[in-house]
Length: 299
Image 1 (cartoon, rainbow, N blue to C red):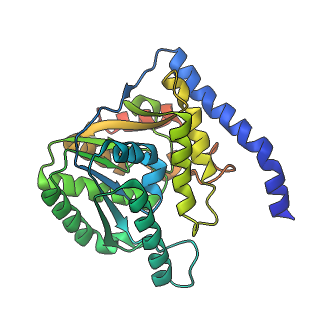
Image 2: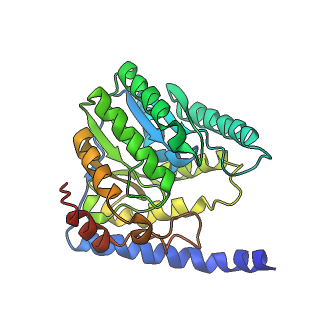
């Protein structure tokens, strides 16, 4: 009965959520807030994701654009993604998720796919090994750009992954730009520097990537398409947007350190996962930025 009630309410909930979130970005645009288009890069690019599907949530449209442009992309998952979804055991779930990652890589033309030895929901036990392998990928790959999950995320393992990415970047002295995408939460608007704009057709192709992740039966992936469309006012003429914070390895390191000093579970008590959760996960920009400033952090 409960499931029937939920399904029956979705036609009302989803448009309401889109309206509320779109208002957030429309108000920002009308106040003069603007972002730059994601600049063209020749690559290679390294895309770092905590779990299978996080790459598409943060940068699925960008990943498809790079494929069309012939930009070489390496994709690194920092965990085996074995904690949830279909499958009776962790090993079975990891195998299913690996197959989904391989399908995603095939569709998007990824140059190389890496599933690092992080154990989903026990990442800290293998953090040193994951950091070393990621640093080796960076050293071998000749990457010009890194796109990664960031520390301002309600998912504790996403924060742990951001710290590992930071350690690997610092270890190799990565000199290029680092772009932080959006996963379990929206970036605070003062941190958003760049956008990747999608046409209606490109947004549909991005949404199609979520069909790969059939093992994740409790995820409402449609919400990420709703959110992308709601951000469109920041780039007039676009149908949907993916948003990013641009920094460099030292700047990313400072952000990771600053966030580590915060009570992020109190600042970001909810994370986006379906149409019922994402309004609760709207980032309280003022609270987050005030807390960051109190640590001495500066962009």
